[in-house]
Image (tube, rainbow, N blue to C red; front, side):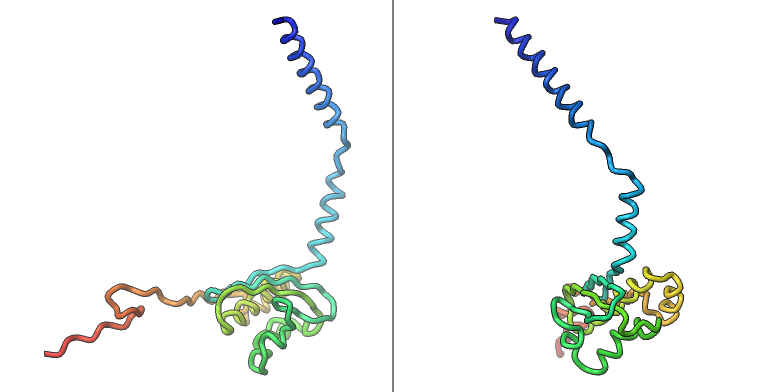
Length: 171
């Protein structure tokens, strides 16, 4: 009986060696082809992430005429009003590319004002990745700077607010 066990383990080893050699015979793809495909994808879609307060905007732009969608809605519908339109078009207006890009934006968190600031920051970052000369123009207008102002945390003993003090007792 011990001989049979030894024979079965040997055959298992040889079987594993055979399958290992057949797996390694696949031809690897040339590295230049893989890099070329990635470069084509990178130049096609511009990406940028913008943040403001607790809002996060992930922006994907294509260089073609079309709508910019935010969470499936057109940007004009999501941010209604002329004041908001002027704010979110600012990065495109500064680099003279208004109406030349289409894309999608995924927004999470925050309120309307914070989301608008996050969209502007994300659009600016995407445009800066598109053309390095845009970076200087956008940074002069302070569109690439993340606004770091956040809501102050609440402290104990402060009447449930960040800075408000409890009323002192009357004497």
